[in-house]
Length: 477
Ligand code: NAD
Image 1 (cartoon, rainbow, N blue to C red):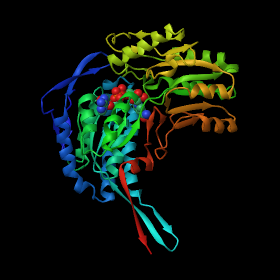
Image 2: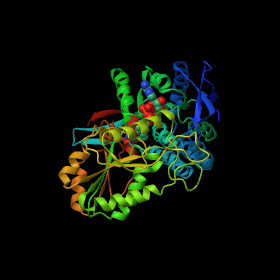
Image 3: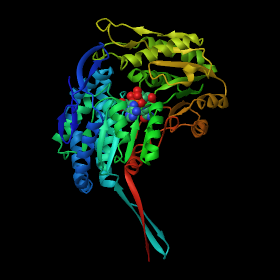
Image 4: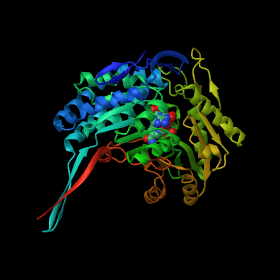
């Protein structure tokens, strides 16, 4: 399936005419082309967005609400087609893609209502003065997203930016371009005025870089790798752009001996291997209290060995294909490194070649044990179907290991002891802690990480605040 840029309400090829191949990771075959856009296409997108801004920024909230809601309905209406496109593009199981399309629609619906509810604050100074806060849209903003949850994360940025009255130049990952292009058609059908959203396809180093460098794009909302995030801050910082960064993770999953172990194991299988482990929130370091270590280990290994790996379109598939050849090679490289670091492979441990999909990028879900807590495979983000198992004795010991990486995105804790749950949650250096659950999301809550996992928070009012400029007006009484 070939896709085009979406600029000023129209589908356009890159001005220079260049294209990139798009590969289906389940087969390894090229199945379409995308524009290999450059700075000239970003400039064109910016001009369209800037022209649309004066009108969109003063469009009544109720009208923005209606249009964003119509986009949500458009996504719901095309759910099956979008899910199929996402599965072909990304390698994820089709059933999972269908769930993610529900969330993509929810993102627009949620921020449609935010447009109606967002309001200013006021601070009275007794009989001296009253202050009120004006919040205005920033102008044209840039939204850059990764390949792992393509439309889910793309819409998570675009929806609040539009709800707050901004116009957007957005870039999906070059590895997963198709649903972003379909979103352009959905926006037109929903009555989004032309130029309000522009989607430029192509490489990060060209299109993403041009968005970040553009002198008049006021803010960058970025989700992706920590190294890219660091580079973006280096470019956008001296330009005093607002930047929101959602970056990598190396999330601990801590199972105490008193936990509901059946539930902990069942959820750990998901939190480790859902979407082939390619979710920033996946728990990749599983710490198990020594008294139940062997029990948890054998239950986990048994459950993971039973997972069906292969054809993403098959209803029973639990683990699909890795998104791209370079990423597949990176993940396999980490498995080899773990072996060299002394890991024992409890299951998986290499590539798989499912019948009919021999050219695809499949990796067997892999559980490793016996690594030092500070081995590279315990410290660096692998972002694939690979987890490490490590025993621990005390709370202090597991907190030290859990907090030892450069990342601080999310943690999961399994215990029935309420006091311990609160204490551990408070001491984990993470932006998000789940107790006895994983990936339970209320879209109003602040979402994001600390340390190398990012700067700023998304979700609810956090996102609306990011996408607005604030001014305090003080009136003497
Ligand atoms: P990536 O950093 O390679 O790419 C992300 C996006 O940035 C892509 O659209 C890419 O084209 C673009 N890009 C690349 N170079 C750029 C540059 N110089 N300037 C501007 N844009 C550029 O990340 P990825 O491999 O697509 O995604 C995987 C990473 O994303 C993992 O590290 C994962 O943890 C992280 N992630 C984080 C979250 C979160 O919420 N914290 C969510 C999902 C994924």
